[in-house]
Length: 257
Ligand SMILES: NC(=O)c1ccc[n+]([C@@H]2O[C@H](COP(=O)([O-])OP(=O)(O)OC[C@H]3O[C@@H](n4cnc5c(N)ncnc54)[C@H](OP(=O)(O)O)[C@@H]3O)[C@@H](O)[C@H]2O)c1
Image (cartoon, rainbow, N blue to C red; front, top):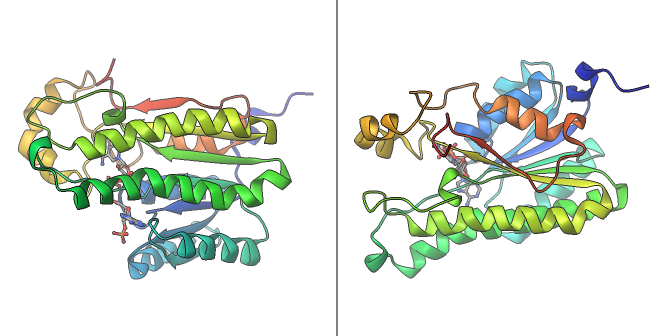
C-alpha cells in the first residue's frame, strides 16, 4: 500500500547537517526541518551563533549540535561529519547553504575575492557532499540539498556587480545535476534550491538600495519571508521527493518566470 502523505513528509528521527545554519536562510530551513522532527547539526565559522540557534531550535523537541566549521577547510568538514555520525549514528540530510558574496565590477574584481566566493559557495559544496557521501553511499540513502540562487540561472544588469557569486551559483546547479547523475545509483537524491531575494545579513544592503527596482520585477510583489523556504527544504529532505533528483526548485516569487 502507498505510504500516507503526512508520513512522506515526516522527518522524525532523521539527522540533518545544515551549513551556515546559524542565521538567515540556513536558520529558517533548520527550523522547518526541526518542525517536521529532524535532529539538527548546525555549523558555521562563528560557533557561538550556531550554539545559540541550536539552543533555540532544541525547544521544538529535537536534538541539536553546533560546530565551528569553515566550509573552505576539508579537515573541519571531516570533523563535523565524523562527530555527527558518532553522536547521532546516522546522517540523512545535508543542506549546503553556507555562502558568501563579493560585489565589485568585473574589471576590478580581485582574485582573492573571486577565490573566496568560489571556494565557499562551490568548493565548500563539493567538499561537504564528498565527506557526507562516504556515509550515505554504503547505506544507499541520503538527501543532499544545495542552495544556489536565481543568480545562478542568468546574468544580472550592470547595477548588480557580483560575477563570482553568479559563477559560483551557476556552478552549484551544474554540480547538483552531475552529482545527481553520479549518485542516483546509490539512491541519493541531489537537488538544488534557487532562492530569489530574501532580506538577510548577506542581502539586506543590496535590497535596501534597490528595493523598488527589485519589487517591480517580482510578480508576487514582495521579498521572501521567514517561512517561504521551509516547504521547499522539507520537501527535498523528505521521502516525498524520493523520485526527484537533479532538480532546481526556484523559490523567487516569480522573479524568473
Ligand atoms: N538572502 C538572499 O536573498 C539569498 C538569495 C539566494 C541565495 N541565497 C543563498 O542562501 C545561502 C544563505 O544566505 P543568507 O542570505 O542566509 O546569508 P547570511 O544570513 O549571511 O548567512 C550566511 C551563513 O553562512 C555562513 N558562512 C559564511 N561563510 C562561511 C564559511 N566559509 N564556512 C561556513 N559557514 C559560512 C555564515 O556564518 P559564519 O559567518 O559564522 O560563517 C551564516 O551562517 C547562501 O548560500 C546564499 O548565497 C541567499
